[in-house]
Image (cartoon, rainbow, N blue to C red; front, side, top):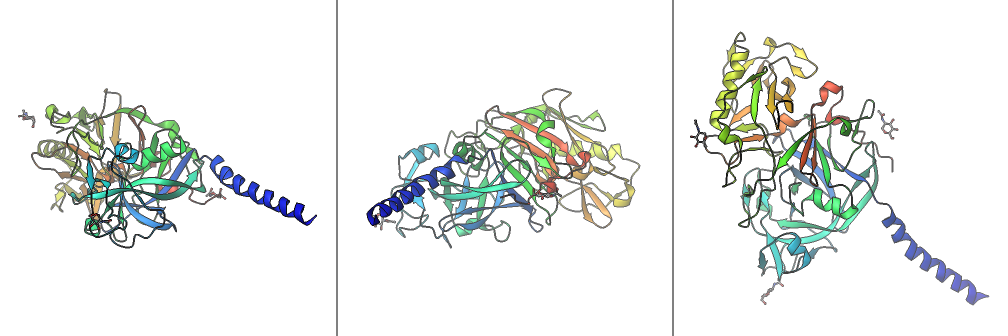
Length: 436
Ligand SMILES: *[C@@H]1O[C@H](CO)[C@@H](O)[C@H](O)[C@H]1NC(C)=O
Ligand SMILES: *[C@@H]1O[C@H](CO)[C@@H](O)[C@H](O)[C@H]1NC(C)=O
Ligand SMILES: *[C@@H]1O[C@H](CO)[C@@H](O)[C@H](O)[C@H]1NC(C)=O
């Protein structure tokens, strides 16, 4: 009798041991969600994941065109599940690393022998260093598109070890950067691969440091309050363009750019085409020119001739409104009370980015074009990028706030909404109340 009950207990235990991991594995999320806040002093967009064993929260600056996740491994990286990527392993080839390194100060996270390396980069200050490629547990919340749900983990999430000095210029408390770019090892690609969901993700940035915007990994619904309106149903699409030459601060020769480029063919202000040098709008053999979207550039930056043409056309369109002294980095500033207000911000001329055809237009309204620099001054929120910038137009964070952008890596297209304020919602209206 005693023997048989022990046996029963044993089988029950075995069943439990076998069943519990498979039960967990059977929950396959359709999408994941991360909150994103705006850091008021740097204008960076900051998100948070959990990483390591035991799990700790890690704050990261969001880098839409970043090649991968990197974190500071010099200070405070403690984890029993840290695994460096050995030279010539499958991980190193996925990461397209072409280097194999040694380290004399270790072994410890970020410093092991016979590991492959990549150059982690602070794309805000455009500083890079060498770092070892590694894997560790990353954990985030899943979502049904309306609320966050069960927390899920990726046990062997690839990332690169950065150094403490690389954090200089990043928002306070940040320990690395969350790269969502066009690579196999960007966070967006790895999440899609880990849970076999659509290679799509969406970014919706909030303009306020006190309310969270959101990043979704996976397909819609992307629901926003008040009515859980599914924004994924109303996107306008334009092709994403691959720049064959890397635009990263440091890279291996022959690497394409991880940045998301779109084909801006022209710019209209108040419906009138602005005269631009079209050569600058396309990407040349050296990878120069074209238009990309960046979350580490606070305001849209334009090559000087484009900048001047756009600013002059804008000033001309509101010539009756007196200007006030410029407030750097902007040049066209006005008395705030000269403008009426609308649902989509100050009543100013619309700025249209004309895409693949004259009917596909990304319209920038006052909320995304005018920056309130003081109580009574509003400035046109574009910045002069000088005569020979690598990329002619860099659409910055301010211009994409409260716009939802969906990046589809499988079909290489961007879905965009223009301002959500028109739909009486905002990027801070995802319901972060968890159902799990
Ligand atoms: C790497 O190998 C070198 C030479 O054998 C040795 O001196 C060093 O301590 C090793 N470093 C690590 C991190 O194991
Ligand atoms: C247009 O830009 C290209 C590339 O910078 C330059 O070589 C060319 O001279 C410019 N054309 C005009 C008319 O300014
Ligand atoms: C947010 O979601 C929670 C959980 O589903 C729900 O109870 C709550 O009513 C929602 N909030 C609003 C404002 O709809």
